[in-house]
Image 1: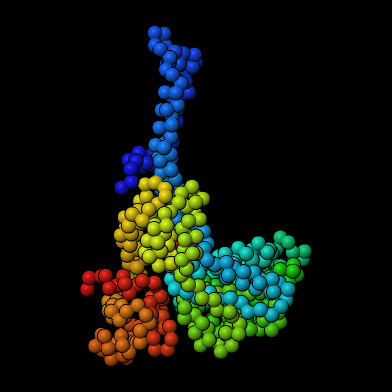
Image 2: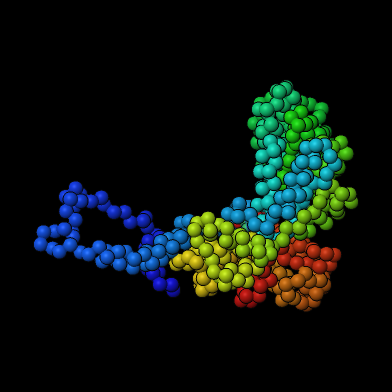
Length: 457
Ligand SMILES: Nc1ncnc2c1ncn2[C@@H]1O[C@H](COP(=O)(O)OP(=O)(O)OP(=O)(O)O)[C@@H](O)[C@H]1O
Ligand SMILES: [Mg+2]
């Protein structure tokens, strides 16, 4: 443990000590000048302060790793203290926004990647970019077996509310809201049969548009109308769909068809998606032209330089630093996965006594962070699996970390492929595994195989 650890901990956990102001009497008669006492030579004072300097410096620098000011943020969709390594994607999205606003044909973007690589964070960043350009924006998070009709209605309601105060023709807005009301009302029941709540639209429903009951027709009409409201203002509308792989198959097909229709008319509306790595195959299974509608952007782990930026930039803003060896150790532990970078960074900061943070600090933090991940990141997902599904995943883990042939998993379990396919299918539905290629299966969660191999059987 670093020297001054005790002092540092005491200092950093409480407020900085304050001095009581000297009384007038004390000010008038400093200690050195007490009657009968010889004045101390001035150089004695300065020597004292010179020696005190380094000691104070160490205490003050340890204050820089105050746990209260820990900048790292392992979470879901939580904006990181530094969005590292995504400049290219951000620049690409700038171009998409600019081209669509100018009525140029442009494919929208779909972000794909494993769990915790930062898809939601990037989607939210894209949304902020659109908002900065005064676009109307709305976002939904798809859920398995839930129609997108109601969530899309809610998101477009929000998008148009953002535009309404700037629109010169309130009756155009009211007309759109009336269409939106009819569109939403076609969905008789909410998720799991719950009665639907009203959207809070207080204009009369407009009958005969976006209310046929056929989602493809209705969505096309609704998106076209939304785009034309935005076009009046010279801006666009961006609809963001997170966990897009969970959109039910008929709804994906309707969504692709309406995006296709809209792209032919150059309407200023884009659908930007994010989801697991098999999302492109979900989309192309639904509509063969989907790869001409969307540009798939794979979001991966951070390279070494970006991972260092993700750690260092927030630390330096707090006045702290990391030794080179500490960064080496962090990269080895987190393997560049953004969620792990935040998780290991957070615990390391809490453990470190002083700046610069050392490799030893990372060494102490490693097992603590790993056990937090085992409970939160891995354990919570493992808990969601049935015994048969757990058995399937264990067999996958025993075969290594690369995508494995499904036939080989069945062989590992000593079973026929057909008898294990229900477990495989439900794991795919739960988003724990995905089919990376025909006949191959892989974990959606990075390092999940490693976690399973470490579990007692
Ligand atoms: N570019 C980045 N730099 C640093 N940290 C990041 C970056 N992107 C994401 N993070 C951090 O990683 C964590 C996971 O991000 P996010 O929730 O966006 O991942 P995700 O891909 O959407 O995961 P899931 O598939 O589970 O929804 C968050 O704590 C976030 O702060
Ligand atoms: Mg996400």
